[in-house]
Image (cartoon, rainbow, N blue to C red; front, side, top):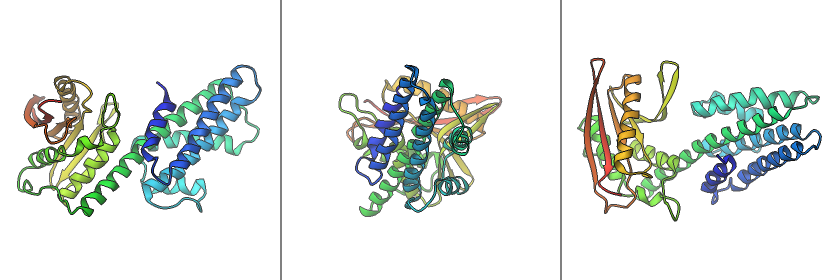
Length: 319
């Protein structure tokens, strides 16, 4: 896995924004850290320590750019500490990002910042680069989702488009299933790539979050909902609540056959439902083509430990 390639691909999503140059600077620090790591392995002294210092610069730079996107505010007058404090205390970072953020800050940034006599070994330098790349990758996911969410909200407002409210008197699972079908009319417009186009998962999730939230002011959408399953922590793409009703949504990118995605996704979603205690779920596969593709729905029920669970599959008739 090429972590820097993943980072570059995700940063391209912001190529037309004010944070583009800042993200390029973060990438430059990471690329320099990687070069230092390779040169040190060839015998140049002390470069493993420089790897950690470059990783620290990438950490602080990524937080500044994330602050711009996630809060809509400018970070120039804030110290890195103030930014970290704000993001943490105001619950801006999602759970998975927060755990990586805390780990990097405590294990690498704080130690190397406050002790100028430290020297780092090859293993420590390697872990620093891997940790910051993992953190930045997942932080970019949240930033992409926020940008897509904001853009969709603006677009719906600007065009005077309000998702259909005709299904508001139905059950939550019926209402959301209908909304997913109407959302599918325009979703293929955000597919990326020339030879093998696919959805940018976090962009799709951000737009869908805004779409569902705009459809009904009583609907609450929580992305990356954590489900505890014994000692494991699982993450459903969405938890959707309305009054006393709730359901989980799992999204599958249409990169394989519909049947393969339905079989795999159904088992995955039933695992989430069973662990969470939530009885309903929706498995959603967006289409590759625009509204020329007919969307299908199908109900699947399962009884486990005496509990009845239901999944509604929403998927294209054909790719």
